[in-house]
Image (tube, rainbow, N blue to C red; front, side, top):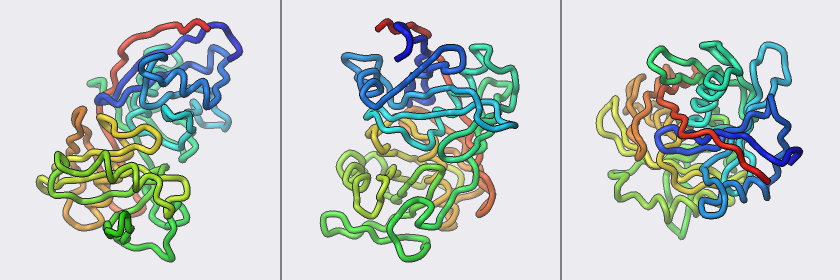
Length: 279
């Protein structure tokens, strides 16, 4: 770290919690060890992900957005974090725009701050080719049989800028999220690991979802996981274009017109407190 103190905000999107750091107006250098120490909920600040706001690297973009999981691994995308990112740059005077263009390792995003304070994120179009996810498979398919403990699980697999596997279940309350989730996360067919979503259909416009997040475990909400679950249900023909997704931390609205089109996610973002960490 280049300074002896670090200003940050603690934020959450439906209970998916973040430390957000302004890397525009203060020098910041992060490594995996520092992220893990900050992410420790007993000896550090505690978070699911750490978000870093940086200046853009390309013309036409407003910011660069980097994401680390609590285990110290840098990842490509985080939907709930994107909403918090938009609120952060507005609340801290870094931008007064209603539409904010940001670079991420998983692709460019446009974040729209709504009049009611919620944030809509254009998450981009999902990708399905196995090499783009990445996922070990000879060709694209609607479902893939992935064996774990000699049991085949039929998964929808796609990328929302980060890799997702989605399993349809009768009840998310009784789904093996904390047992099957980590096993599938580290399955050898996912060379960069995977986020594992469990989806329960209520009707054509309402689902319940739980997500085991790569590098973070089960969180109260996962924005890209909600998007991936709706995309999977849409492709299978049992969900409409606009879907309310019920997560443990609250609800998101997900809209997807179909293949080749971007996924839109709308939900809240809350700033809990601002603080300075002294080293």
